[in-house]
Length: 490
Image 1 (cartoon, rainbow, N blue to C red):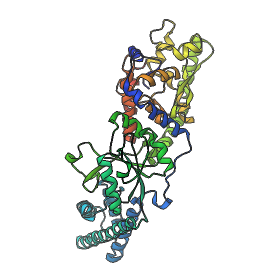
Image 2: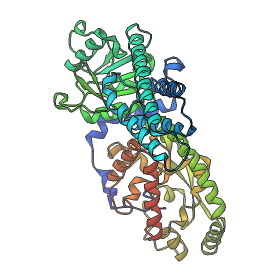
Image 3: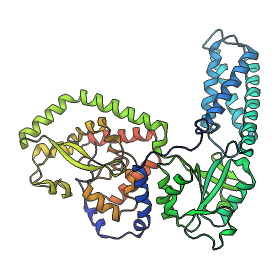
Image 4: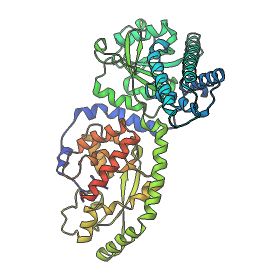
């Protein structure tokens, strides 16, 4: 477990004495995000059967196509069911189950053909493993019938969705950020072409055109009111067409959507030069980039919490002899008070008590909360110095993880005294609190400990939140183990 930044750093304390205009510009948006996090959870305003989009229905359609093909060709061996798994996996990888504004069978055809070839190749490979697999001619027949069934079912599904959108049965209340030329063009297009399924109900802008009568929809608020407007008008999709806000401000403003169940699309800068790809949506010649959902809205985030519970629980049991030895050593060197409790700031800025083995007794609570670095303190004994260098002092935080105060991986928590100072001077520092604090993190995995930049740490932590995946957590844990072995703690 790597070194804790808040009590084991830093020459970077000088950052507290400089002013950053970018932070001041985004402070209102950060405050709004914190307020939204404390309010009642935001719920998708659509009926439950529309909240997941077309993904579950396309999956059911592909399963139905497979059943139809199986009923027609009656394959003799159930091994061919493996092909269904291959189809679903390939379709998922190439994005055929993602929600899209344009559902086109011609666009999907190359990927459907690729999945068919992969499935057919797999069945041919099974001939050498299973003696009773259908002969190649029958496999070819099944592959062709399955391909035809998938194409027919998908054509029907896409037709049904388009008609439902045109008739207003399926439409998403849409807010456009920026009432400039591009935003107005998008609103007019969506009103004229309902088959995109987006209903523009208004704009968010601080400097809209002087004549509101020229706008196809009303201005519902200013940029910093984005979260409030989304709640009040039951918005489902947000399209960012920029307008008068600069990009730095927009980053903080759009993060107010993290806690809201909305989809966010960005119109790329210089979009006339933007190359469309498989994962780019498009509205009448204007490309849109769909912003990745906030990590805590991903189903994998619940898996992350389950893993935290299992690993921390097992680790507390397995490491109990080591915990006992360290506790005895701490008691022998420093007397009573083995566990050191210190208030830290966690998820959504809420404080909690982090647990550590005491390596040094502070004079009083004020020293505990405000003393920046004790690494070179003369009062630090050999036991305290060793458990800090080996990160053994961090082991009691396994109990914090089991309780839910922390996660195995996440931004390292800071003390309130320094959070207050850093949030004033470090760009987007408070955005680190969008996820639970961690025992180790992306910044620590890159050696950002000791005399390193707090601003860099905040940047790395926010990168972790924006790009989280189970594999990223695994990478961080592997790097952390290596650092512990090399005793790169504090």
